[in-house]
Image (cartoon, rainbow, N blue to C red; front, side, top):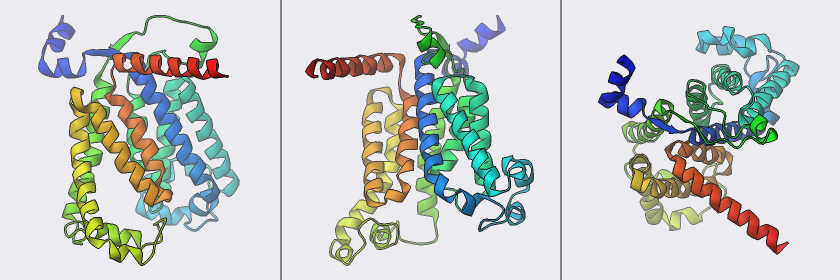
Amino acid sequence: MKHDALKATLPGKIFLSTEDERVYAAVRIGLALAALWSLVMLWPLRVTLLAEEGSVPQAAAAEQSEMCTVLLFHFFPSGDGVTLLMLLAGAAMLLLMAGVLPRMAAFFVFLWQLSLMERAPLAAAGWDMVLRSFSFLVLVSPLGKCWSLLAIIGRRSSVPARVARYGLVLMRLQVLVVYWQTVVLKLANPNPYWWNGEFLPYFLLSEYSRWPGAWVAEYADALALGTWAALLAEAVVPVLLLIRRTRFYGMALGMILHGLITLAAPQIGPFMVVMAATYAAFLTGEDVRRIGQCLTALAARFSARR
């Protein structure tokens, strides 16, 4: 009775209403793929950034983080230990993707992301923060049994269950915080480059740019508009995502924004993949069904042509 009364309240309707478990499955798979991509990109630098014999000894890292001495790298300090730890993290990501022991796998992925950011905070990127937050949210969400490897092998074709949507609500709010915090930090930063539109020209002249060169000066005015447009897009995307009728416009705008960033700076390409995974939290069961139908139809057409 108390549970029913709670569900009747506004917070109850927001957090305890049910959603198709396939939406959680989409987020789970997307998160695992994004985390695995980030892990693969980090692999060549694993000893330099994370091992005791690398550029930053663990004692120096511990001065910046009291948690460092109790997290995973404390038990795997050497180069070989870091390699083993990354292999274990990759295995956990594959298990999470396959839906095999998903709760345990999500816990290890979260612990890996937390340990990574505490061990090498200077090397941590924005997508690492998103992966850390979403791995925790997946851990505490009702994962369901949909789209798991065991279900596929057993050919179980049951009707998708309805599960509490509180995890999806928290994920959506987290996406809003990611974008709006970014905008606030850029505008509150003491440097004026975002305000006066000079950020993109300076960035495109840096070592991160794909095409640095004198051509940047010739398009300073257009690049200033691009700077302000990027800020506006970051502010608008979460609003569009939160409104059901405009969520696909928000996804499209977000992917265009991150796609252009990746085109200009391929080193930060994983951020596009990570944010695309977070967009799955804004889907509904009906969206998942329609996307599945479209993919099935495309696969059938491809098979027919062959």
